[in-house]
Length: 524
Image (cartoon, rainbow, N blue to C red; front, side, top):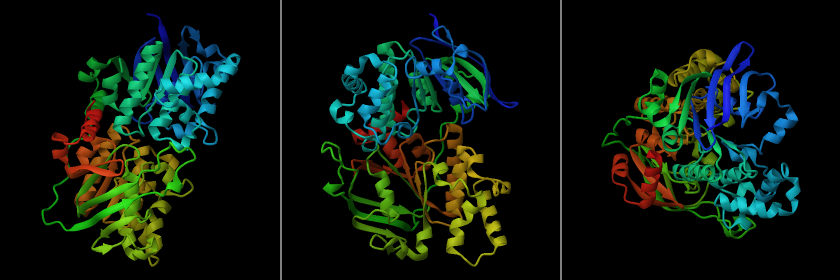
């Protein structure tokens, strides 16, 4: 079978530094080829090079052919005709790619009209057909919807509809499910496989999740620091990797469990009958659109030194629960923290207790001020709560906290854009740890990290919990991470607790069908 895509000695340089180093890849039509590796391994750069989308300051060399066309000979105008026509691209975060001011239907029609202006009269019908193909029904409702009114999974389906609008020969999916819960991720990848087979496309699948590679890919190329480590058929390569780096990826699945909680550990947090319902007026213009998630009669408790994992799909109420605990969302019921009822207090009414509850965000890059040094970021909260500290004392506290998160002191004068995703997460963790909290709310802290970095972060969080008797409310959709982190699990669906219990009991004997679906989706 003739190759759909062929890369011959592909190299991408920044000055003398090779970001991709002499990569060879052959991919026939109809194949799913996975590119795997840690952050910075060159996966996304390889994909962008196919479309001619690399920044101008990078130098590219080597052969690139698509369907027999030598891509290195094409000018910008020719490459523009290629993008979205011969090659469709699905990005990790659709909200950054979709225009928030335009309806879904308008954006799909624009994707078609750009390459097929001759079918102007059929644009609306074609867009509705595409919405049907990506299983967004009824099509009229989604056609008139704006991106902000859709869930993460629905937005990704819109991106797929735009990517396949002109029946491309090659689909490139760059971490298309990283931000989605496990069940939605499986639905999206099942959809991509169905579309690929129906239209005979090739799929270049960029991911750091080997469970998904096992389930969906035919061939895999393993990259490390821009170099190809090994390449081959998925079952054989992942079962019997010949290189140490590939073995480290295969073995990077989170393992172990947190330290047991003492039987007499005191209770730190209790929630009784928490109910949050949004008023009817908060609905969007189209009456069919569901209101934001609510919480219904939530009861939970958390001991000192314990991790309670809150799992569930998009819109299940996980983030609403976190906001309620932080005093950012009001509702009915009681929230008792450290023997003090806090749900009726304004945020400033917590006094010094407020520093005892801290939140670690999913994306540290967007939450770290880019113009502040690491020292200023980490020390900011401490300067707010303790204005008596001298500059020397502040530096001493920051240095100790950075050591706690296993970062060297010399990072103090550097800025967020100089660090990897895993390092930024550690900086964000240091920023909250310096306040000596008792409860950390961890909102998907590992979702955007590759497996090797995830594993190290989980081990760090467990050590910190043991050393400082921290309690964690761990929000996640990744059950393999939950299994390695949590003492107990609470499963939310549609704002209701559908199941709760000890971590191993939930995994070994799930009682509710939704919990079984989550577990099945994770283990593939």
